[in-house]
Image (cartoon, rainbow, N blue to C red; front, side, top):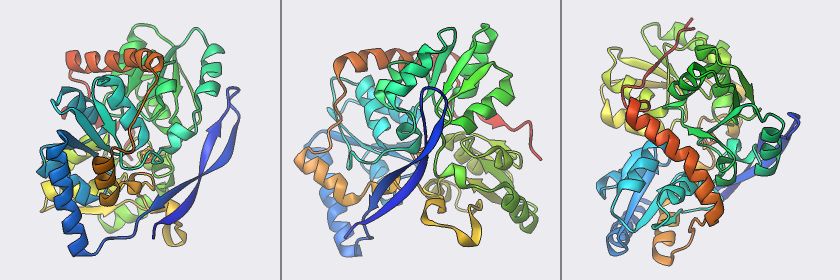
Length: 368
Ligand code: SF4
């Protein structure tokens, strides 16, 4: 039977005020080995029969990541997932991730059908930035270029000038600053602050955060580093400033993965969702990956460094959506067409500049 967990997240209104709201996620218990094998085989057959391809995020369960690779799909960050789905010839895209990823796939590939194992799998950044309040916030600042993170609803993207992912955000905001633009940034305040520090851009921020990365702790990280003095510290920029301050490298999930694969160190302390460790261990088996500390001894489930909504993606859910065509992502045409502009702008920029490729590592100028 699935377990339901409750989580607090930051919800902002149009005036910049915030409150703490509550969300939930349900997670299935692990499957017995024989049952797991049977479902994996059924998923492989269903993918072939339905002309479908599985596109998985680095944070979902390792079994789903392995299945995506085995069946010719991909495991990637949200930027690469969007590109892969658009360019693949399959009629049906099965997106294992959270809802905004499915919506982005639909916006880029309206002729394809997009299915997800669980449409309730969402993101605290998306939840904390409701479209109506965000639109009013934009109306209050008409002189600013609106830049939104990928972790937003299609309706929020429809109000934006640019979409960015953590892989290309720094390059795009630098580009806008060079053009003399003032920026309205949403929704992740930690990523926004990091980009503002690095670029010096004039930015006002939405006050959202990721419930996973927000839990990493700077002081405990520095204590852990003392136990592993040779370890490199890799930090995702959705983490708080006190954590970023200790980083040897700040970067997107792909950048962190590349740092482990190509880096000289043998140990890495990593501050991001631990779903990524599966791929890190596969591609760099000789390296030791150490979890960055969250709330320590008193850690609650919300600080286990694993996204509860990513964990809602299950093998059972995958098979169910494939066999029954449930969990289809639908985006109203007008929203899709408006949201397409900001995503296409980002993809064109990335294509022209190489931003967000494996070379897009972000040095941490403020490393302690
Ligand atoms: S890890 Fe954080 S940013 Fe990513 S989907 Fe989960 S809540 Fe959202």
